[in-house]
Image (tube, rainbow, N blue to C red; front, top):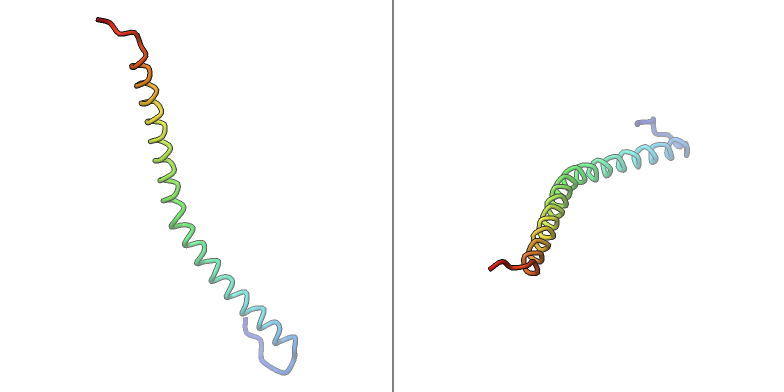
Length: 73
């Protein structure tokens, strides 16, 4: 936003506000880009960890059953 510069304090304040908004938009764009790059990886890793934990739980439970089940000779 470009407002003609003069000695008016309101014009100066509006220019500073506009510049601040532009800077904030750039920061928000960088944050959004970082978020878009990180979140899919984190989601994939969380799903992988959950799957491995479930597999270990079922494998451990089956191992315990095998240890304590009656043995046929």
